[in-house]
Length: 361
Image 1 (cartoon, one colour):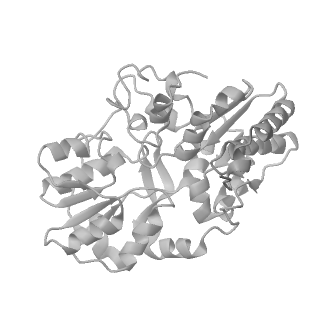
Image 2: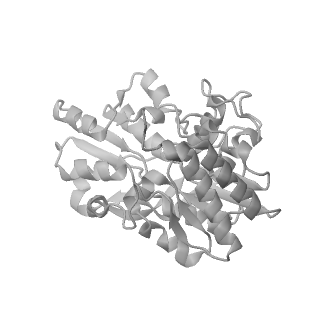
């Protein structure tokens, strides 16, 4: 049966694009960064790195929403659970390590921490109990609008959200500003781009002359985005191009973004492995303060967390190294026994590399 994605998986087309990449790249070195767990999964699944010339590298940056949640955010949720409240979260967050352990550790100690599949499930739970229910608001621009929608719906007064939502463009800009890794160009994330559109990346473009290409998730999508980045560099251009026009409009989804902006305002926010990034977090506005767990509860978090010895998750998140460059990768750190968050989440680059059995280029 024919599928609309078949043209984006065609072997002959892939061969042609790869030939073009090799011709365009020549002997010059390119270090391309993407910030999307689904892109990383597609790259690993289809062996794209093994097909590229050695002088064309593709690394994953801070594109895993679970991996980038700062440890003190998790500790805050654990303290809420320790006070006897109901805490809800998505499954991937349960095993992520923090100063007080993980949410799974806290649950094993008898605290009421529940996995939900959507924030609506958490709000419904609150309507059926007298206890306080606090949802852990995690995710990028793709998830944050659903949080905004639930708050706008006016849930029960015993429901609140602890917002650890983050936004991608400030993180991309910070990678460039830090200068810790060379970035020849960005493959912009498909899912986030459906929300923010091409216009969402303009602030980066105005400051840094770095090519950006919005890409879908099929092999041809990714190969084509690499080809266009190299072509831009060869032609002396630094523009935002969109190869995912079947899903991403230049303006994104204005209705979803308006809803997000109605409920949230930007704030400086901590990112695991990177530090505080200006205006990268989403704080619940004053109008909806009664649903803001950070204001509703008087919780102090004075814990600290250091990456375990040998763990290079921070360098992986900053696109400095590949997962297999970490000395713990598949040697004491694997999906069954993860040491760092990059091995916990299904969108973490270490988890993905281990899942597909990739341990070298």
